[in-house]
Amino acid sequence: MKPIEEVTSGVRHDWTNDEIADIYNLPLLELVYKAATIHRQFHDPSEVQVCSLLSIKTGGCPEDCAYCPQSAEYDTGVKVEPLLQVDEVLEKARNAKEAGATRFCMGAAWREVHDNRDFDRVLEMVKGVNDIGLEVCATLGMVTEEQANKLKAAGLYAYNHNVDTSSGYYKSIITTRTYQERIDTIKNTRKAEITVCSGGIIGMGESVEDRIDMLMTLANLDPHPESVPINALVPVAGTPLEGRPPVDAWEFARMIATARILMPKSMVRLSAGRLQLSKEAQAICFLAGANSIFAGDKLLTTPNPAVDEDRELFASLGLKPRKAFKEEMSSN
Image 1 (cartoon, helix red, strand yellow):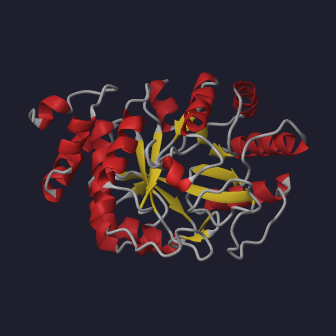
Image 2 (spheres, helix red, strand yellow):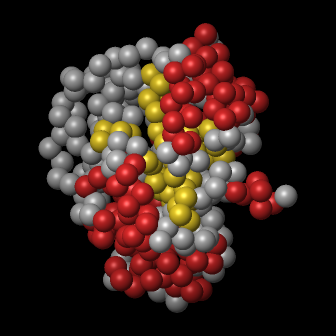
Image 3 (tube, one colour):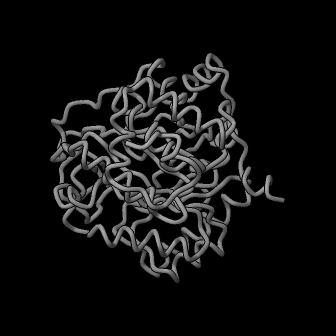
């Protein structure tokens, strides 16, 4: 194994599986130390991006993602709800901004975007949220390059499309969409000059090798995703993964730290599953390079820590919310 300082020097897009495995399998405290060191080279360690996530169209999705309570394939008790009205979404966005969020993410349980009145309404939402002064993110399923251009013109700042897991394990989790289709959607949003938010989920029965392979897929995208959400499975009754055991906190921290080392400039988001982490475990994740969270008591349909709890956590750790559009301001 090469010295890690040699392996991790600079921003790279040519990682090998063996290099990532050597990093991932370091003793945890050594891994966290190295990740924290790199984090401080590229980011203010006292800043955390606070994001808010709203389901604008809930349930009834034709995909069969084994982790998702919004799939029409499973009986999970999630009520199917139509696309929200623009005014309702803008009110939620204003409330999120008042609560301290700087990024507002809108999720629709669609397989793909269709050029219809619903998409036109989403474009209105994007424009309105952008006018409020929030970074606007959307996750709407697959998009074409033309649709991505329309979202960009409306003011979309980021598009979320996770790879979810490794290419090899993917078919064990999803059969209604290919891994390549996910990569193609990421490429379409990138061509439209929309920033990319893409990460994955651990705790779905995948191996360590699958986690390493997923990280390699993300780390070898050029450029790296600007945001990399690391999610721990939240098992939901009625889904095929309902009986999965919770992810160990140190496994979560190991993924955060490795992602930080591989993608030093990216925002690494401590995402779904944060509710099951203690305050101490979350602190280790922030130390290891996590600098983005979702705030609010719900992530689409799954529970999340309350805003007041996060304020208390930030205060005790000396953390502060990152300003919106900071990269643009610093480049001017």
